Length: 100
Image 1 (cartoon, helix red, strand yellow):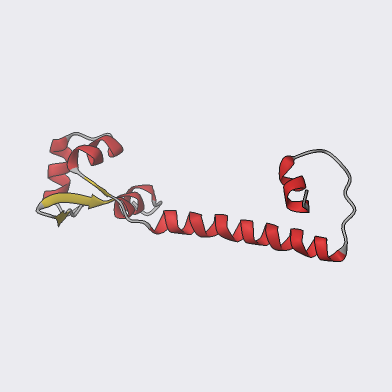
Image 2: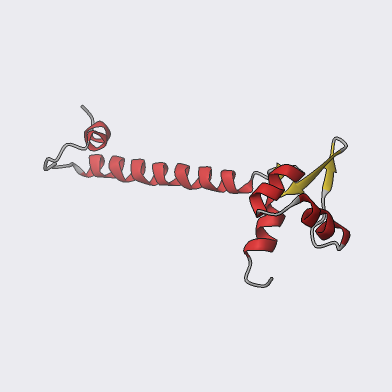
């Protein structure tokens, strides 16, 4: 059983490590943390789009409110494949900022 497997098992024991094994454990923890951080960044950087129905549900508004906001340029849709869509990042930015 190697050190990493022992650590992942969650068994409560005392372990004596050689300097090489300690470096192996440190490298493993750094790599695991780096991978988790990269996955979070990738997840945050993926743009998603909502249709009108999804946006109304997300904002808890009626479709007439959405229509009015579009007419006043409060919300600007984009067209993807001829269909109206709203960038989730822009909606979240507008409605979650303290500068409303």
